Image (spheres, rainbow, N blue to C red):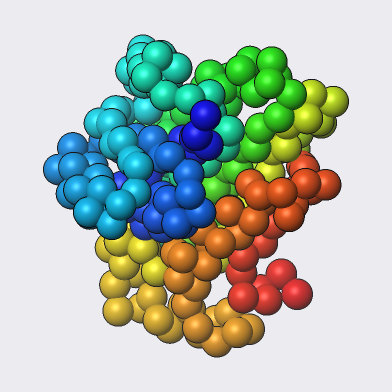
Length: 246
């Protein structure tokens, strides 16, 4: 039976880099994303390279759609060995708390907190029955310290994701399931390029390593946490930050 990794938000940025990394490591990969055209284009490129991949168009903010996504996975694929929650949005960057829109707040929390939580709930029973499994939540350095761009709402969502990761790791460690988070600083992705534009490289130079982080570098940390090399690692929020926390 093949190894299956499920990657949410897998059609762009860090999620896409994770899809490619798990494919290179011999996994069958299922990924979900809202943009059907991007899903199809990525699936075609991976299949041309010989990888076994399945892209589903799904809005994981919709609880019914999320449940159907995981029902289809259970019906058509091997048991989930690894879950990577890379789904996430910034909300309204550079906005004061007093000016923040309530509906955007709800969207950020639905995307960055509720969706990963429900994805975890969907796979944990099967992992518990198997006595093994790995979950990695893609948080942010804003889950450890204040966000430099996203403001209080983005920071709150990522702090919640880190807290959820740590608590769930304690709950499920007795069942052989490891749950961790990665916390990147500034990463070159379509999202960050759209927010920061020409300022992205300058922001990258604020890291002690004096450059921007590439999405593939975050994917390497995600894969390591999912692998046997990290078999005694659970409940951590790993900075991938070029030395910023130092």
